[in-house]
Each structure stands twice: as C-alpha cells, then as structure tokens.
Amino acid sequence: MGMAAESQFHVLAVDDSLFDRKLIERLLQKSSCQVTTVDSGSKALEFLGLRQGIESNDPNALSTALVNHQEVEVNLIITDYCMPGMTGYDLLKKVKESSAFKNIPVVIMSSENVPATISRCLEEGAEEFFLKPVRLADLNKLKPHMMKTKLKNQKLEEIEEPSKDENGTVVAATVVPEIKGSTTTEIGVLPLQQDLLLVQQGEQTLSTTNKRKSMEEGISTDRPRPRFDGITTAV
Image (cartoon, rainbow, N blue to C red; front, side, top):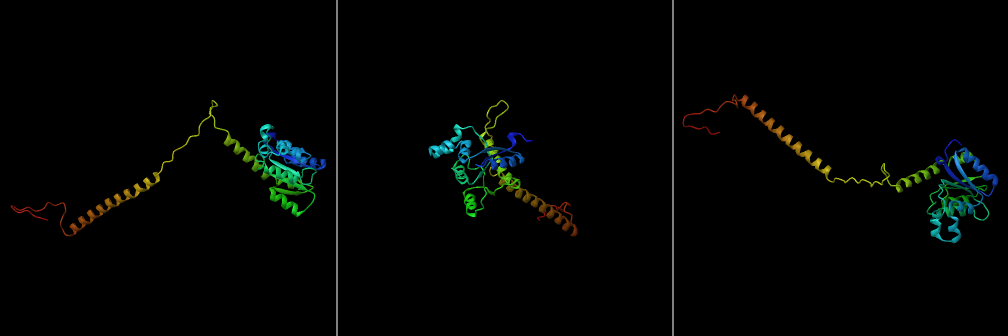
C-alpha cells in the first residue's frame, strides 16, 4: 500500500453485509488506511477489549478493559446502522461511554435516509452519517477526524513518557524561577537618568545664558573683581 503500517490510520469497519465490508475495506485501502473488518457490533467491542465489561454489566470493567487486552490503536470506527443484535447506534453509545475509547471518531452508515435517525446519531456523538453506497469522496472527509485522534494520542504519549538522558536515566524537568519586579526596576531607573540629564542640560544652558548676558553688558565673567585698599567689594 506504499506506507508503513505504523504510519497509517487504522480504521475499524463494522457491517453485517460481506459485500459492504469488502467495499469499505477496498475504499479505505485506496486512501492508504489500515483496515480491520468485523461483522457485528459485539465483535467490534471484543476487538476493542470492551466485550468483557459489557457482559459483566460492570461500568468500571468497561473503562479498564484494556488492562486485560492487547492494546490496539484505532483512529476511527465506521459502522452500519442497521445490524442484527447490536445496532450501529448501540455500538456508538458503548464507545462513547468508554473512557478509553470515547475520543475515537465514530461514523454511521445507512441505506435509509431518515432525518430522525441521522439527528439521533449525531446528537449521540457520531462525527458523520453517510448514505450507502459509500463513495471514496465520502471517506476523504474522514482524514481530518483521524488526524485529530492520532495527534491526541501522540501528545498523550509525550506527556506520559518522562525525559531521559543518554544513559537512560530519567531527567527531572528544570523549573526556571520567575524574577518578579525586574521590569518595574528597569522602568523606574530610566526616568531618574532622564531627570539627571535634564538637570545637567539646564545648568549648561543657564551658564551659557549668563556668560552671553555679561558679554553684552561689557563685563567679563572671567575678569578678576577690582580691589581697593581697605575696601572689600560685596556682591
């Protein structure tokens, strides 16, 4: 199929019709997807590891069934609506009730265009509702849903897996302490420097003005003051 299995999207297809299962499988493979097909809703739950929790009527077993089952990554479930025993709607509800699989996108297929049925499935959490026969253009709409699931799984793996150094030792995350008030200090220094500069400029301007005024009056500020014997000039 041109792509490694681990890089493909994995789709679980559920339909009691052999013809429809083969059709869906062929279309999904054309979209470079890995496909697992089953002929009933109960077998789909068994593949996911949820069958044991259903039979025991234990809600806790429903969410922890993966502990006793081989872990399988499924990026999307596409199921027929009308099937004997467990319907596609029932399968949708069981998947959404599971804490382990509730984020997996579920798509419903049906040969009957009944608005009430479509609304019921969408309200329960189905991502799409396709009318049979399903076309390749319909399946192309599923790529964004599968991509979202795959990215979520990758992020969860990154969060759960601790960082390790070259020797395989777990490295604790480095916490950089936040230095509070540093911005306030810088802002407070700048106005003070500006004030000193303004004062210096003002003194230079005043000195220049006094010298110019003295020159205009014909008196040099650098000339020594006249002295008379016994008399001190007070200014």
